[in-house]
Image (tube, rainbow, N blue to C red; front, side, top):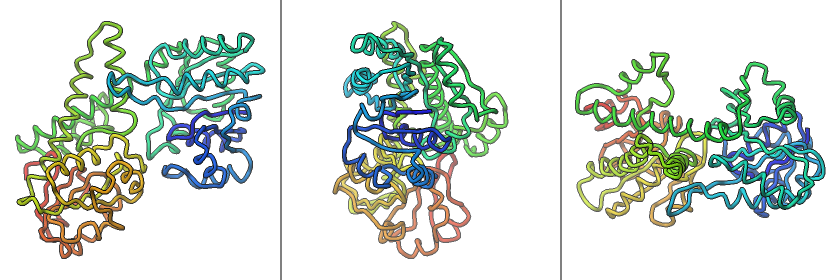
Length: 432
């Protein structure tokens, strides 16, 4: 099958590589000439665990190519996937559809046979209708089905999720489009494909992310309760998760949720609800409490410093492990809040240093490794759950620091090892 994917970000690029690995002819399109040139030359523009090998193999065997030309990319394509960004509006926080609409307007000119146009970007309910109208206005002769094909790829696990999805959701009532999608996923014999109407499909993506955000906010609130009550949040979460109605996933307490999806999608869901004249207080509260939590986590770290000249070492800047994405990362927000208090901060992340620098500028010291970051520090804090940090030599770190204080906001370190090395160890959800 000939597939065109518009957008080469954290959704478009892993999806393009995945479809190419399945044997399809995939052309990824982006108007960022510098990015396209790098990709054409075999240089990945994002970090995603497991992506490099598949990217190189399919670039070499010709199943995967890149272009900045919409005509070159979409002409004669059987399936066109729109995977451009839908960033939040700076004031209303609604999903900004300017890139979706621009893509639809441009691709419409080059539709010369029956084509399925699928939105994989997370879009407000009714966006498929808008795309359909745009294509019809620009190319009234276009033979096209516009469908919703939402992505459920977790950053850091996108390759795994592409090849082992929980479900595939397809929003269309067209039999012809359904047959094409069934052919596309013919090798996914154990995965349930849900065929629903387009507006239901668009809603499913937002509803899923908003629910998971609420679940994360709940476990973080419960962690605060455990600290006061003398319980251990990890033990409580294990007991809760053993209930099949609840499940273990998204019950890890932390500094708040971030990334490119949950903050954006909860705000967009809230905006849509108000447009429809309904209230969703559970989501509104989750948004507000998540913002407050990140500020409180910064205060928690600062509480362990005694002077304005205290040195704080931050390990982890990406919003989660497995990715270099720092967009709305709790770690970045916490660092920015601590900088308001004039603390000296050194930072290190195994993959996200370049991304973080675009957000933090020259306000912090960038270390080449974790050991350099902690030199002469008074406090070290874990803000991203990289496995690298579990494997550090904490006895060595103890000898590098001014004071031996660890604030673990991801609960990934072994408390016994830290205490044996002479640290005062503080974590989330347990009275210390």
